[in-house]
Image 1 (cartoon, rainbow, N blue to C red):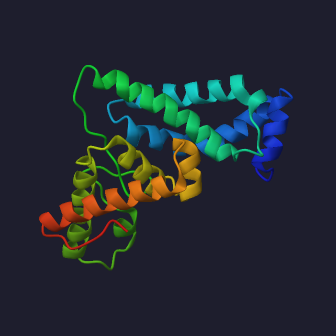
Image 2 (cartoon, rainbow, N blue to C red):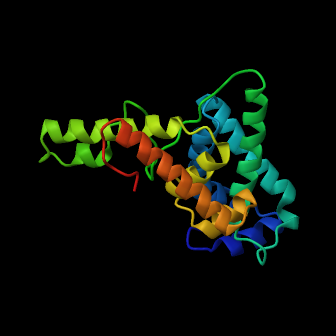
Length: 204
């Protein structure tokens, strides 16, 4: 079923064919997991797996109402994830101050991240690898420092999940111009943070 489009799989799912759900899960579960991980940083790996399951339970319950003329499935499923994660953040925020962990367009990285490119390229010197890893850590710290939740989420969708402005607008239910402003503002804040650390690099 790997060659079938999302639209065909959706129609099959509406007909009750569970193998279509299995394929959609294969296509989107990893991206949804990392989106929720970056958005709701306080969740444990097991909690994140449960959230992804909850997202697809919601997909099954709501699939009859899905209208592909209004949004792509990818936009729709990330909107579901967005709503669930925002709700989890709000519940968590009632009890504890938090900092959301973000990243650039990589699968994942933390303060101790070593890039796959750096590991793969054995021709790079230890100093070059150290410099790259130091930059990744600085970027993470600066993105952690963003206090505006909407800016963080827009940036996460743009860099982590490689969504275009139109798709992010659909997920967040904001105008395209607002999404563009959120991303540009967040980028500027991260850039200023990096410059304050003595690193003249942008997140791009």
